[in-house]
Length: 187
Figure 1 (spheres, one colour):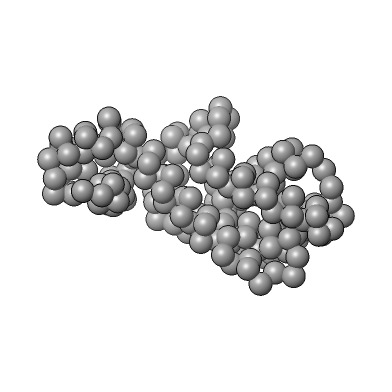
Figure 2 (cartoon, one colour):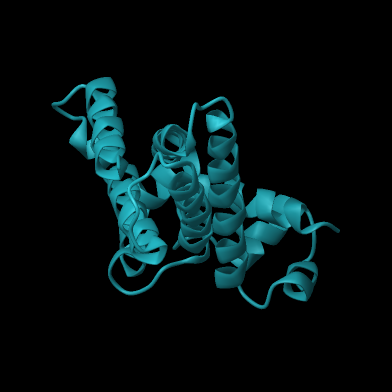
């Protein structure tokens, strides 16, 4: 049995009841397998959910990165990809459920440590920034600090877009986001 079957079942459970109320037994039931089958692949429900979040959010960011293929330079590509990533994450049902039902689970990834998806995004930013340094479209700075700073800006928009657009037009806010990011990176 492929892990994707189990992760798809976990996704269905999280969408139905949230992360905290998803159990290994429910994942097994939804996947129509025994609990032992799930245990053979994952030691506990937490590891299933971590694998699910990494698969889903890394996949969204990978898809967003394809949006910048026709950009004129690396800075434009980075801004397009970042905007697409914010849109994709903030609209994703799994991400929305996590923030709506179990927001306390996100807090460690904001104040304590970076998760696998954040590290994946940071690696992609690192490559784009280095390419921008090479083509002259991005202001030179230490790439590690620059990629972390961009990650933090992008992350704040992804986590806060919905409440931030309660009284501000989403398209206008995202346009401002792209302007801020572009201006910050200009040489």
